[in-house]
Image (cartoon, rainbow, N blue to C red; front, side, top):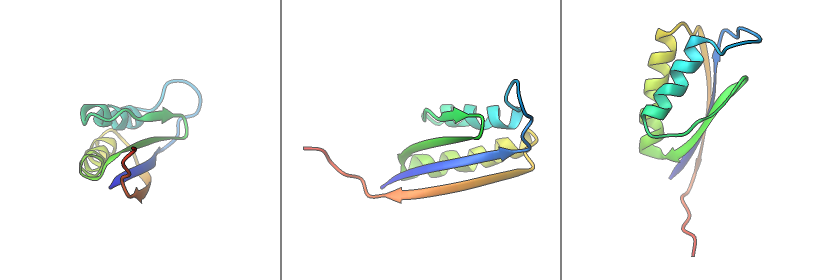
Length: 84
């Protein structure tokens, strides 16, 4: 099973450098072996179920620890397909 996850950490800080909680979340994903699509309005990842679920737990922990007051998360599950 493949999971796609999108999340936003708040508070937003407007223009300039991303807030520490967003950077901490991105870095946790990279440490987990995922390459996030990191943008000003949120972050998206995809991968196998086990990897994504473990990484999301770490994301929640580090983002809250770095000052996030709210994290909005959406996860979509898809069956893995094999290409022939």
